[in-house]
Length: 135
Ligand code: UDP
Image (cartoon, rainbow, N blue to C red; front, side, top):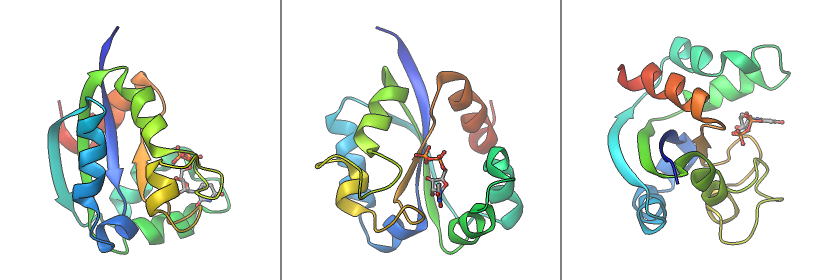
């Protein structure tokens, strides 16, 4: 199986709920290693750049407002099938639809404040990791 890297962000809602450690435990117990990490207050410019693919969507401004509403915890995760594994740990975008036992089912309140981000493909992961951690 392929060793991959993926970008994960613990969003402001989950940081405010004080569950960084609980979420890290899920990564570690699933065999994902935290190989880089930084806590950061995103600027609007950084949040807009990160979510540039969603610029035309109706929820874009609310998403940026939310992402700058407090500090986020950003990490690169490494392991076998890291991209898909992290998406499975996260659960569906809308926590109401997320499977029981997933991070979003357990810690997220709504489709906007949904606790975590995770890259959706290996190529996207490389771009997103470089966005925050450089090469
Ligand atoms: N989002 C939102 N409203 C929506 C859809 C998405 O606020 O109707 C936000 C939500 O925070 C989501 C992010 O936009 O996590 C990116 O959306 P995407 O479809 O890429 O979902 P994800 O990959 O995060 O599951």
